[in-house]
Image (cartoon, rainbow over all chains, first blue to last red):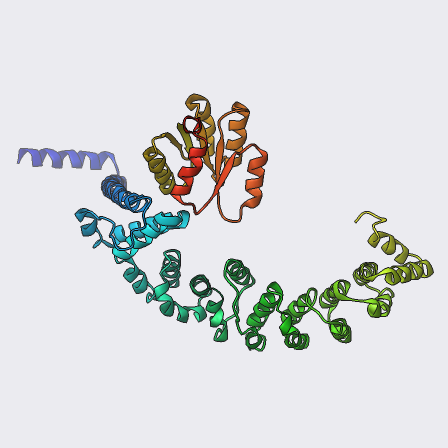
Length: 378
Length: 122
């Protein structure tokens, strides 16, 4: 009672000294300070809890990494100098138990795949055995059914690196997947497993094959043994990128027998196809090839015209000299330079005609003639 | 033989370390070129195995540093990826003694290292 009376007296004294609004402000201030302190306290508790969980997780991951390292090392150096086709790599009970944990499986798979990328020989063979022994392909196959494209692409890459060619049929359908990266991984996988025969996906593919992917596939095929691929069929594909890729294959493997089929590609509606066909004729030709190029010259744009002149430079003969000489009178300097260069390569008659023409016309042909004959720096 | 191994891929580094130790070598590992260059003088290795593509300081700089420090001794083996022929040529120009292309066979690595083991050669 005494305390209550004391407080009431005090408050009434303060009320007399300070106005009511001021006390209200003080109360608000106390509430704000209290809230901030609570917030900071909560944040601190959260941070400490987060650090604790994180360090626990890190410790767990370190332990797992050690277990997976030991397992991989065991596989890589397992009976070093002997191929163990039938023998399993010894796996500890602890590792076996951990295989039920998704995160451990993910970590181990990533490490096995990474090691396999860097190792060849018996060690790589042992890693492949370990991968199979731990039934990891099953999880990759399960990931192929994921609705996320990146999980699918990763699973395909994993199966490719681990040389799981027995699952090639499961991968074929992905070569025409709507996602470009999934498609690329699947095409790479099929070609790695089946070499040239793997290119059969080109029969059905409706999506375009990017330039980069075409380079990658050609690079992969460089190590494979060429077989009859049915390129003539791909040259008639409705997918323009398949036609372009088929033309690159024909050029790379010097498929002379496709000369007449490729001549038809010079009239293709797609400019990339026509350009690739012109490039094919830089190396593979008959005596009539240059006539076929010349007859189509006027229908083409500058880029294609320059490619045609370059092809004629490589495959042309004396009979093409009048055509090249006629180009020297064109307005475009690039055409003039290319034609002059082609004339110097075709033969003595070409050089003589270029010289005569340059003498007659003067600037800039005289300069161009000097330039292509090496008289001027490039 | 005392071997300094420079490789930024932890897994490969541990595998190299394990294999070389198994072959009876003393192995010192570093995770990047800068660390390797700092260690060369203190360690005085009999052989250096270095990866080419590493952050901060490349394997080529490690080759140059080793050859500058030990012009007549301490052979260097470079680890290169597929399609890095130009870098390998550059490595040889800087004085590298051998190269191994990734992916590599640990047995091949072992055999190549043995070539530089003077105690065996003699």
